Image (cartoon, rainbow, N blue to C red; front, side):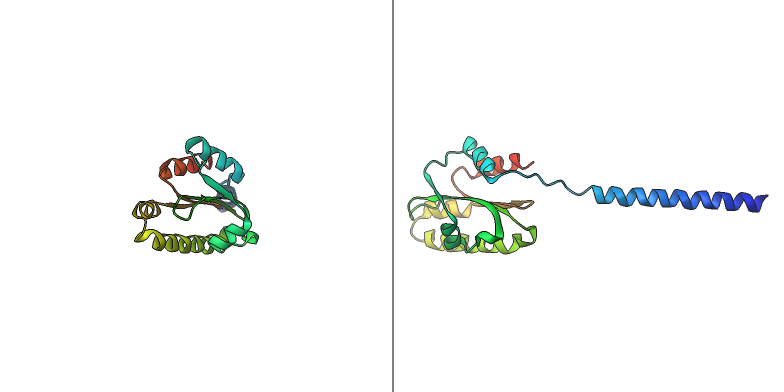
Length: 164
């Protein structure tokens, strides 16, 4: 009777371990971080509510490619605003990247722009250089924010709050 008793509980134990393992595995698979799908236009609207970017000029694909060497095939949508004069550093770029694996490459391109702009302003326009130095470049899932502005903190907070 003890042998039969041991075999019965051994089977129950194995089944319990299997059920537990399957539940752990399925929980691990389902706990992936949920990515919010928000349009870039909605992010821009939130930023406009927090900061005045009316002095900036909205730009198109050609300007994005010229300034950042970012091909429109790499991104799902974008918003680019720059100062209307080359004497101002103010800039706002929001990208929704198609594939998160492209983020490092695109960030490198943005960093190259930052370096070029900083070099341009460093000796000639110290106030604009200061703005460049306190820029924000950050990612949130497949979104990228690059901002140069006196209101950079407000812009960053708006970006963060809408993508929470």
